[in-house]
Length: 199
Image 1 (cartoon, helix red, strand yellow):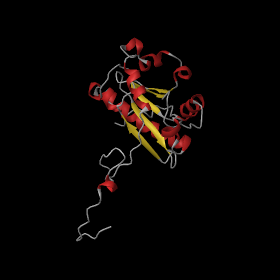
Image 2 (cartoon, rainbow, N blue to C red):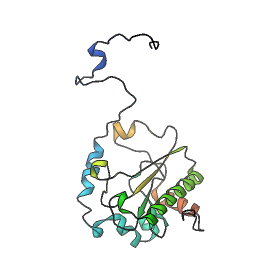
Image 3 (cartoon, rainbow, N blue to C red):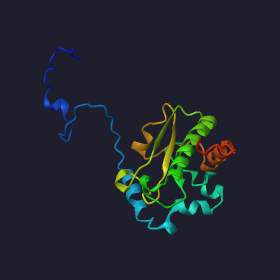
Image 4 (cartoon, rainbow, N blue to C red):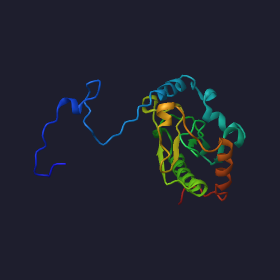
């Protein structure tokens, strides 16, 4: 590594390009190519054409066990992701069939935020993750598998939970069944309405 005052020598093109002769200068990103995800992103969009074909609108009509719901709030509910990245991957969804974060009103926004916080607390109690990924993929081009109905991802993370299997073998090792995870998270969810936003 050069000192601050030194000028680094130019490196040969072979050192800074890949086999496709594209710029390969190292930057802050380690890229994991997951082209298999494109089929999921593209495939789900055409199937959800209305509230009648939306799995997030249909879920509250079923029992909690059938729909994998762990908590029902006033404006939003929490359920397990049917295709989890990790055990305990939760989704926080408004009951209303709206696609964009700007479509939810103040009460829905507050409850989605409070449910997300409660989900993190419950997952810490149940499975002791060391981190989380939280996020909303907005629109098909933003990576949403179901872009028509807004949903917040709450993904628990542990050191070493990412490995080569999803990339090389298109396989994800999940340690528990969805039913087991739903039971644990639902049982640990506060029954005193703790998901309501603080006033």
